Each structure stands twice: as structure tokens, then as C-alpha cells.
Length: 69
Image (cartoon, rainbow, N blue to C red; front, side, top):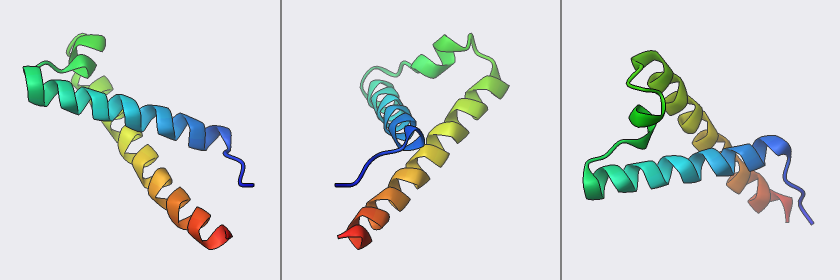
């Protein structure tokens, strides 16, 4: 069985938070990330980049699991 590393688990969490945030933006025009960091553009960009890198890690994980079998 394939074991997930702590980085993979954090990636899952970040991507889920990012997906929920985008859903709330689409439905209610409310950005939780902006509210969380009190409008700091730099912190917003850092969080969005972290979610982006996490999504790339999950894409890599999918391909790694496919070749693991």
C-alpha cells in the first residue's frame, strides 16, 4: 500500500481549502483568503502560490500512484 507523506497531506488540505474558497467566491462573491489576511496583497499571493504548488504536488502524486501499481 502507498503511504502519503506529510507534504502530500498538507497538499490535500491546501487544495481543499482553495477549492472551498473558489466555490464561495463563485456563489457569494466573498473571498475568505482576503478576509483571513485582512486584505494584505502579499500574504494573499503567498497563500495562492502555496495552493498552486500543492495542486502541482497532487498532480504528481496521481501519476506516481499510477506507476506504483
